[in-house]
Amino acid sequence: MKRAALPLVLLMIFTLLLGGCFGQKTPEDVVGDLSGTLDKMEGYKSQAVLTMETGTTPMEYDVQVWYEKPTNYRVALTSKQRGITQIILRNDEGVFVLTPHLKKSFRFQSGWPENNGPLYLYETLARSIIDDSERQMKMDDKQYLFEVKANYSGNRSLTKQKIWLTEDFKPTHAEIMDSSMNPLVKINFTEFVFNPTFEKNAFDKDHNMSTSSLPSVPTMGKATGEGVQEQPSSQFGVIVPTYMPEGVQQGDIEPVTRDGERVVVLKYKGAYNYNLLESRPTAASVSYEQGMPVNLGFTIGVLAQTGDNQRHLTWELDGVEFTLTGDLPEEEMVNVAQSTYGVGGK
Image (cartoon, rainbow, N blue to C red; front, side, top):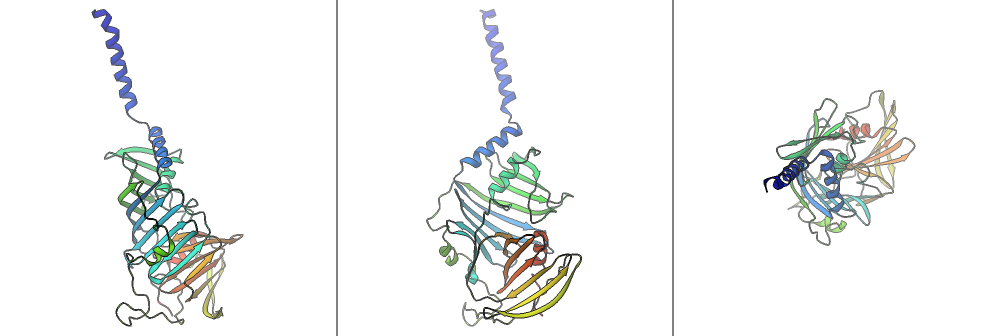
């Protein structure tokens, strides 16, 4: 009896050893499970705090993301410095950048966020892990910590990123770093829910423009009563960016009239040739054939390729609309745009 039981005991021990070996997942197993989670999810809601230190002044945002498979997106970015909320919305009508407190919107045709998705989207984080064959993974306080390449076309100084995921693949924290491993962009997720339910009008443009949950703040106009703001005058001081790329000189500043509106054109020549147009448009809605939203730190801009080595970047700040056109690389365009923040008109 004892001899007959010996092979059974050895088999049980061998099975337990195998179970111990295979019970611990390899990085490839974890990435496979992450890929399966991404494929199976029907949507998510997240809440996070985004900190950007890529400009001259650190910027903080409260970020709320809603995603409904396959292509509905609503991203609400609230600047803690300015108290202003803007919304990036994608639905069957296109992609929009909404500024509800000004009742202004940009509409454009775009592959966003498939093309150059931002850090605060779950798909961007997951895909950067799945697609990097040189990824590194370790456990950090019962979370998966991945170190992977960063691929953000708007800022070539961002080269590495660290991403923390729970064991059920919910994001908790992420950092994008430069080549010296200094974190320049951080995001802390305070809430994340897979497969939530959405109201029918959650991704409707008009509903998001009129929702009362968004803060309404004064612009450059003066209060004329309780909660009523004067519309800013079409006259405004010229805002000169504080940043110029190396090898560039500022040229003429020309006031012109286009479609009955006053426009100021600042010209720059040298290593790059570009113009900066400033105006106070009266149209509440503007459409573009192409483009993608770009977070400038203080507002959201629309960036489009207009020809061979030609781009234009449009953004609005305190009622002034800026359009930067020329042969500047995307990163330099963002640098010029960011240097208009906090600059008084002359």
